[in-house]
Length: 505
Image (cartoon, rainbow, N blue to C red; front, side):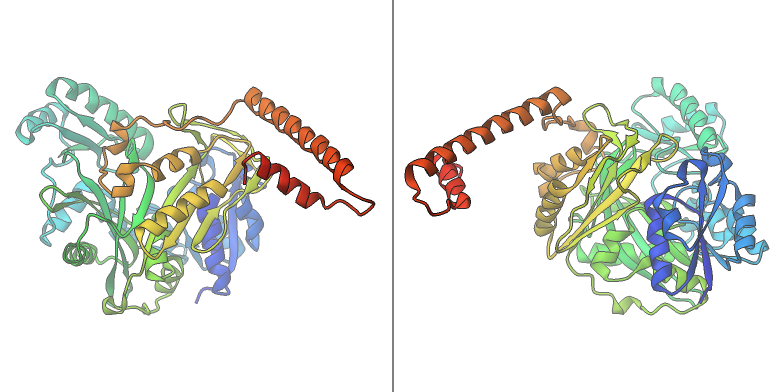
């Protein structure tokens, strides 16, 4: 096993990996930007090193600086987390060249699956079903000609990345040229490549992904599916495992296909195969492979009992997995809500500030992965995700009720958060019945709940509470004067009588 691991990331995922290393008895190294000097992951690690200024291109995206820190600290492995450099083949190759183990797949597998067109052609040879689409590298006029053959609606996608960047849905030919230009510009800014391709847009589809684990000894397993259809602008907001739309037979078939896709590139470590699922026709289509740990991995961990991060570390160290496919027996239901620093009542505009109060939910079946603490700063430099709230129940109904309870307990003051949105979703009839798809939020008006009271409304509420308290005090004094002898008054009983008289109890 490794002696020391450097975590090349920040936020809640850095904390998550640091905890896994600690449980393995592995020393840890954190890296941080100037904006993250007081971040929680810096405090958790055994050692911490400054990378550079706040912008990620000058800190968390600097391969040379991270490798240099790993050498200085004596780290023998690097865990990339997710985002930043986690799917950069050149980073995995740089680790290899430096004699440092990259806790993830090899650069060849990342490169093969990182380019979506290459990935499509690779898995096609293994019989994996694909959505009709084009090759990469086509000029705009070729894409327009191909679009008419594919048919509308369709989706423009960046060939070099994911996460909703460089994606545009197009409903008609007249809007295609401008959408291609916009997608190319966004793709270039996000991934350094403006290559895009077209794909048939499957209406009312669900986003289903299969978690896989593969070791270097020829054992590749599927850990089941996750439902990721609650999305806004192609960004996932709520995930759950399993999915209400997938039957046992379909689950087994999709798992086998996911394993075949991973084996087609000699994949080793944790990865995710993403599919579009057409519930109307009961068909699924390969979308892409994410060659890293996913944000939503905790829901799979809760239903399978497998610590995916620990398995990543063991696999990277050359060990055999402890599990075979026949050993897996998923149990219960898990739901994850991504808690972000965004205002759901104002088009999810990012919110910044200082966390002035924090109370995280606890209790049976509740898990919080967070990098927050009272006094920490939330800036605009990085992704707005603050934490992940995950619950587990015996069934989906219990998981939803538990998530409602946990969201009601969650208190974050200092910035606006997405908690009210998630509360609204847990009350949604469509979500409860599981009749949603990837277009659900596009058809739904977000913010049906009343927004959080303004400062003046809060002040009015405080004044009203003080007035009510004074009434209680005066009434209690009056009752005590009229009814008591020299014995001491039991104020708990008096308070109870007053509330009972008002019908509160």
